[in-house]
Length: 329
Image 1 (spheres, rainbow, N blue to C red):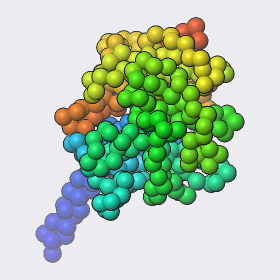
Image 2: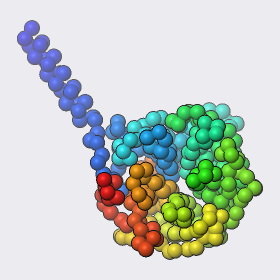
Image 3: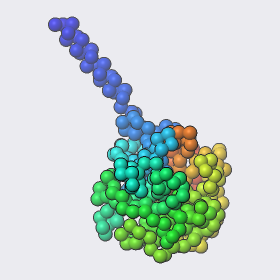
Image 4: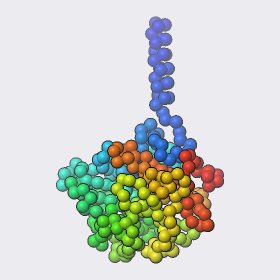
C-alpha cells in the first residue's frame, strides 16, 4: 500500500513538472526575428497581418500558412501585445470546390475593422482564385458579428476595375474607411474610400504614385499621414520607402528610407505589413513587418519595432529587444 501511495505521488509530481514545463514563459519584451510562441507554446501563424484594438483587447489577424499553402486567416488575442492567445481560424478555406475561397487559392494580408453603424467586423484581404496563381488580383470581403469570427465570406471584386493585390485598411478620425492597394501589376499604388458599411468601394479612387511599390502600411500623426511601402522583388527583401501627405488622396511626398541600423537597406530582411498605434501612449506606433521564408512560409518570422521621430519624420531603428516602456510608463 505504501509503495502504491508513493508511486501515485511520484506520478502526480512528475505530471505537475511536465505540465509546468509545457506552459511557455510569459513574454515581457519584443525580440524581432526570433521564434514567437503563443500562450500554448505553439508558433504564432499570422503572416502579412494586421491588428485591431477592440474593447481593451488587441486582435492579431494574419495568414495561416503551411509550408507553402494558404490555409485561411488565423486570429490571436492579447491584453499586453507580448503574449498572444490563439482564438482559432477566423476565416477558413471553403470545402466547396466551386467557392472563390476554396483550397489552391490565396488569401493574403487580411485586415479587420469594426463598423459601429452595422455592428459588424469587416475583413478585407487580397484574394487569388483557386488554380489561377496571381491572375485574379481581387479584394475579398468577409464579415462577422464577433471579432474572433467565424467570418462569413461575402464577395470579391476589383475596386473600380483595378487590380487589388497587397493592401491595407485605414479608418480615419471621422470613421471613413479606406483601402490602399497595389494595382496594375503592382506598378501603381492606389487608395479608394469604402462605402459607409465598409463592404464595397466607392468611386472615390485615386492613384497615389506609380513606382512599383507594395506592402502598404499607414498611420496618422499630428494631422499628417505617413505611408511605408516596399519595392516589388518577390519574396526577397528590399529598401523601404516613406511618404507623407496632408490628405489621404495626396499629393504624397517621398521622404526616403525610414529604416536605420544593420540591413536597413533591406528593411532588416523584412517587408512591411501594418503600423499599430499604442493606445494610452503619446506618439507611440509599432512598425510591423514579416521576415519571409519562402522555403517554409509557416516559419516566416515577425519584426515588430518602435517608431521614433527625428524632426517630426518617422524613423524605424533596429533593436534586438525592446519594451513598450520605450515611450514611458
